[in-house]
Image 1: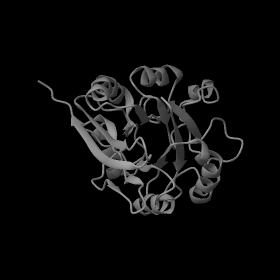
Image 2 (image 1 turned 180 degrees about the vertical axis):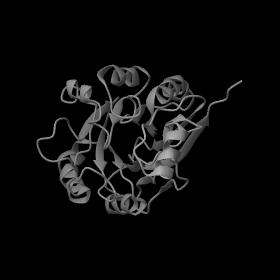
Image 3 (image 1 turned 60 degrees about the horizontal axis):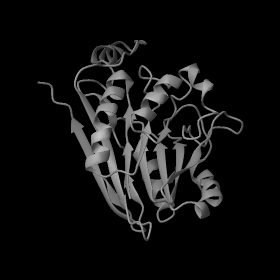
Image 4 (image 1 turned 60 degrees about the vertical axis):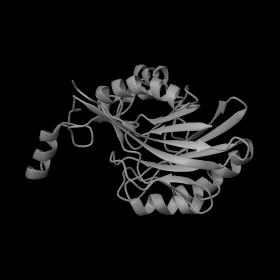
Length: 262
């Protein structure tokens, strides 16, 4: 089984490049399932019903999110209705939506858990370590493969949770920083890991948004309106290959595609 986990999609630039690249990747890499983080897909912040549909029609099977999930209020129209749209599981009890799901792939059942970090992150969320224990107790017997999208800032927190869950989940990938890291590996007990998947968005940008407003904010210390950048895009992801008989990770491969403009 081949599973593609795709980094944060940023705005229209990211959506269009995701939709343009994913069908060919699914064919050439024989991909069975696609998980993508969509929390920045709507103009750089949040998600809407129509954009969620775009991502699904473009090749996504499960859409995870993060701390920007609530930035566009239109997401409330679908957050409780779409079984494969996730928000971080460690939001307070009673928060709309769901933090994990089980997605069928042929005869296999794939669990996907979405979690947010606590270090340098807002809003405050519950302990992802102990909550992961509770979620795994609910779903591990029903799943052949379990994937975790850990939307967090601190690399130490991502590594710590990965080692804490090593051998209990198939893969833990980091999202949120929009910069793909080069530390993909299989941990000692078999869990595939990368600190950050990266993003799908404009290459000539700062984390997918236009350069000038970000630089201005650093220079002046005053608020500056960010706008999604356009132009040639990058596509960041990892491909995780799982042995169908043993349900163990065989390989994790980093994918980085830079759009060529003729």
